Amino acid sequence: MTAKLIDGKAFAAHLRARIGTEVAAMKAQGITPGLAVVLVGEDPASQVYVRSKGRMTREVGMNSLEHRLPADTPQADLLALIDRLNADPAVNGILVQLPLPRHMDEAAVINAIDPAKDVDGFHILNVGRLATGQKAMVPCTPLGCLMLLRAHLGDLSGKNALVIGRSNIVGKPMAQLLLRDSATVTVAHSRTANLPALCRQADIVVAAVGRARFVQGDWIKPGAVVIDVGINRTDDGLVGDVDFDSAAPVAGAITPVPGGVGPMTIACLLANTLTATARANG
Ligand code: GUN
Image 1 (tube, rainbow, N blue to C red):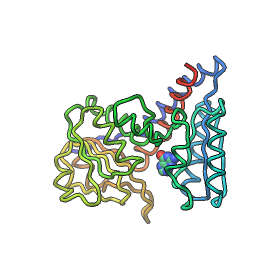
Image 2 (cartoon, rainbow, N blue to C red):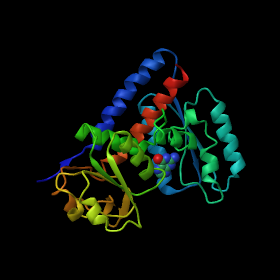
Image 3 (cartoon, rainbow, N blue to C red):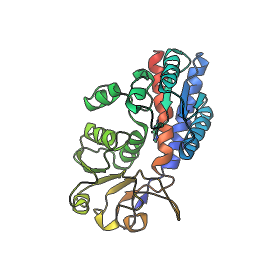
Image 4 (tube, protein in one colour):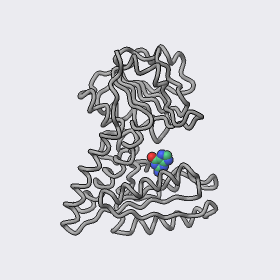
């Protein structure tokens, strides 16, 4: 058996096209969604992400507002900018690119964002809402993974899901989303005992550990759906957290890297910005 490829690139393109149609309808009513992206410092990977976020925001017809601040910006200045963006009715979504420079308190910065404009879903209020089943802004990468899983499996109810990684950005919200869809969820991390055996019981594997080719093919239950969140730069180019060559012959479906989860993240950011705009105007 060879896994079906989950084409996140095509799925994301369809999603962006649908968003573009909805943005056009909003514009006809005089409302243009606006997404503000704040980048502090010159981290090269962050610069690439911010540039492609800006381009795709404009492509769907939204306004893209970019704020670039030097790495030594005092935290008070960043908080003052966030206050202005919170108060600006032309701004519907605010994203502060992470990681922040080390002199900044990440939690304080994130929690300064108006939760209604928190399109990353990182504000403590949105985290709490998601965890308690209330209407929340949902973090973009796990939301993209969930869309791909639903598209390939339909109902996730009763499936054994293993999330490898416990970050606030991916692992923890992914677990919450799978739980919300009635999967049986296990969260594994660097201290987990006998990960291969745990993995062999999983109908769904979401790998978000940040270690190149970490998950091996002989860990995969035949027919399982494998979602690879990893983006690791190696001498062979970009590779995921899953050893694709050994996993693909065993899995039922698998996301490639690149072209799997990556494109879904920005599409979901635009979806969240649309949702925030609709809520602000309705
Ligand atoms: N850095 C890496 N991933 C993300 C993300 O999803 N949002 C933000 N704001 N920063 C990130």
